[in-house]
Image (cartoon, rainbow, N blue to C red):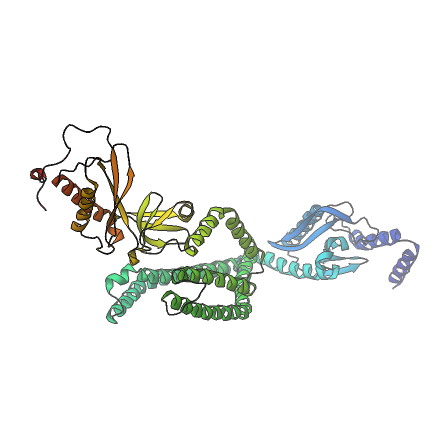
Length: 561
């Protein structure tokens, strides 16, 4: 009692005098009992030091005290000139010595002015100061000390377990049993998949064919059975991953050193499942809103489609919209409505506010901006072609040097089918920049005439030439009788007259074949009556007429039609 009273009196005097005196007393009060027992003070046992004037200062690099593969506490301060790494190494060495000697407790913490000391079996392990905690993360010395004591208790218990052969043998036996059970489950899963996957596909194929929905050839061509087989394989693969993950987690948790890894895997699995479940639950209101928006817009699109279909079929007339432009206008309005739907529904999509989602949106926007200059040009040209009503599906047209029937009017290009059966694709920008001739637009009203030209010398009576050309038109099938064909003398050249016969074709897409028959009849008639065709031109009269006698019209190997 006298010693205790004297020591208390000394502490009171030290507090009054100065903090360095208090520091000296605390150091002596900690090392004193050790010296009295005849033991040398260990450098691994840090003295109890107050943070307020004891040499504690912030360190450039922090260090984490780890024991038995478990992190205990992170040190961030220099204490009495010792870096965090030196303090960690000293604490780990003391812990190894204690476990080797069989000392596992008690594990205590004692507070001092501005800090705390953690000890095991009355031996100091590490001192924590206010500079060792992360104030920005909301840590306190008391909280960090309590967590470190709890982790240290678990780590020492596991370190002691790792040095117990009986418990290691039990852990090995349980791990072997877990591996065996996991392997058995995998084997059962593989066998089940091989046995039932093919049978399920066969049953589905047999039922679909029996129900008369489709035949076997069409069903296999649709790749529906392959999709079903792929779904079953994916489910089996997912089950195998779950089995492997669970087995590995179980085995790792059997051994003290690997137990933290097993716990982290189990925690990751539970956390992931929990996050997914919470994400799905939290996304339900947003998905419900998106569904309402989409359903509403689909109803609007259905009404718009019915209205444009009525205009296209002529059941409804609008002054500013023609039947041939109704379909592209419907497509344009449909795209605009869907874009508006996406803009409205975007904030309600799950994950739309995350940085990843925003980054992908920005990336797609940049790609569209930098890579769509030519695309926008083609689209705007397509609008010009459509709304100028320059072309219609089924019209026989000439665009530049290409003649054919229009079979497709697209947003980016126009497709023609030539008389040779070829499909020619012309970009809309080229269509806009070229001269387009439509032979079918007024052909329905018998207002489109097709010309064919011959040049005849001045020695042939022009009335005879007119009669021969008109007679050739009468003999040709595929020409309209009304309006009647007619002939014009378009030019009086130096050595010949240019005659042009104008006819109306019954079918513009048979243009070349009809003109072929017409040209054949022209040659026959002019040869029959001895009129020389001087096309394309000549410079002097020949010695004899350049005509073919009627007896030679079918010279070998030709035969009469």
